[in-house]
Amino acid sequence: MGSAPAQAQAPLTFGIQPFASPPALFKRYAPLRDWLGTEFGQPVRLESARDLPTLLARSREGRYDLILVAPHVVPLLTGNGPYRLLARSEEELAMVLLVRPGGVIDTLAGLAGRSLAVPYKESHAATLARSLTDSRDWPDLPGPPRYLHYHHNNAAVVAFQRGIADALVMIIEGNVLPARPDAGEHHERHLSLGDGSLVRILAQSERFPGLTLLVHKRLDGHTPRLHHHLTTLQESPSGTALLRHIRHRGFIEAHAAEYEPFQGALEDLETKFDLQPPIPAEKSTP
Image (cartoon, rainbow, N blue to C red; front, side, top):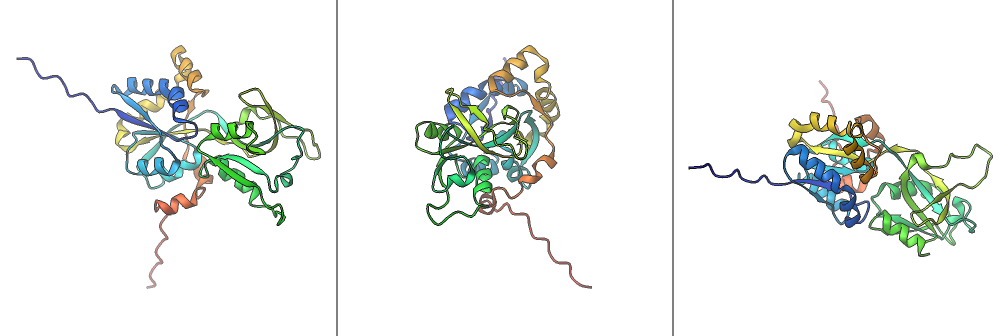
């Protein structure tokens, strides 16, 4: 009598931070999902969440076997959570604050009373924008700029393009940024949005690490091989095609020190999920 067929393995779950709409995320990262399925020899399914707190709550419960997040989220999952660094995208990113060229807003002070289209409040784009605007003294009237938060980057861009907001905050690849002018220079710098429209760069952040892949500690046995294969994808034609589809130049090793500057970046979420580091107990006196 033949043996019973082996029970089908449950799919692994690959979580993605909601920095774009779910259809856009799933279309973009489907080839990486399929590649991971081949690497693990079992199905992998993609999942996102309606917002970052939901994704974080699920990850803290161990729902995701792998998870792709922005760098400011990494300390929330690796500091005292079940995830470990696997690799990060080779790109370096930057926040840009954009306005329409030829308009009346030509300095940060010109944002007083204006509206900014920004991704959700826990996004790195929003946290970096607040670091620019919250540090300024705004006149009582018209007051500080108003933040219009959207579920993801794409929605914020559309709101700006439709004239709903006066300025746009978004994350882009740092290597496409025009060089910053030298001190004393005042020439305008421009970028083109996806629809071809031209926008002016009013301000930008320093560059920071790209999207980071984390792996649950229950997959520790697979991590060395997976890390090696991820970081050598660009060495094969099929790997190069995959990277082109998911719009990453490649994956490189992620170092814990790169994420130290992001400690405390999401203080409200750290408090909500009780992720604050414990206060050291005072030494008893002899």
